[in-house]
Amino acid sequence: MPHIRVLFFATLRDRAGMREAEFDLPSKATVADLKNALTERFPALEEALSTALFAVNRQYAFDEERLPDDAEVAVFPPVSGGATDGEPPTLFAITEDALDLNALLERITLPSTGAAAIFTGMVRGVTSEGKGPRETVYLEYEAYKPMAEAKMRQVAEEIRTRWPKVQGIAIVQRVGRLYPRTPTVLIACTSAHRDDGVFEAARYGIDRLKEIVPVWKKEVGPAGETWVEGDYRPRPGE
Image: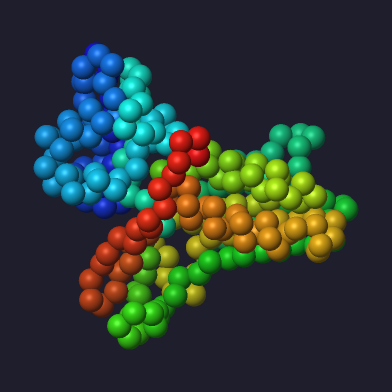
C-alpha cells in the first residue's frame, strides 16, 4: 500500500487550502488513481486536475504510471547548482536574492571567452495587451525548487547538445515578491566567438525554461490578483 506525500503549488495550493497532504493508496496505484483520491478529498481541485501537471520524485509523470511507496508527488499548473571541476562552467539556481548580472557573468566566463549573450526578464509595471493597459503592482513567484533546478540542468544539457561550442551557461530564477522594473530571470551563454550559437542558445534557454521548469507567478494589481498559467504539456521523457 503506497504511502504518498503530495505537494500543492500555485493555484492547486489555493484550491486545496494547504501546501501538502498524505495519502495511503491501494497496491499498484497509478497517477490516475491519485487524481481520483485528490478529487474525493478536495472537491475544489476537480476542475483544475484536468490540466494539472504531476511530478513523481521530481520527474514528470503521467496517468498510467505506478506510484512507488513513499513517493513525493508535486501537483501544479502548467508552468508559465554549479559545475564540478573539469566541466564547462554551469550555474543554475532558484533564489530570493537580487540578480547581480556582472557577478553571474563572471562565473561563466573563461580565459578563452570572447562573447556572451544575456537575456533577463523583468516585471512590467504596465501591460498594454488585451483590453487596454493593465497595471501590475507586483508579481509573486514561486517554484518547486528541487525539480526546478533539476530541469534547469536538463535545459543546460540540451543547450550543449545543440550548440557544442557554448562554454558557460547560467540559468537563474528569482522567487518571492518582485516589483516593476526588477529582473526576474537570467539566461546567459558564453563562447569564444559570437557566431558560436550564443544568441540562439540564450533564446532557446528562456523558451525551454518557460515550458518545463516548474515556476509560477501571481500577478497582483489594483483590480485584484490572478495566477498566470501556461498551456504547454510535457511529453513522456521530458
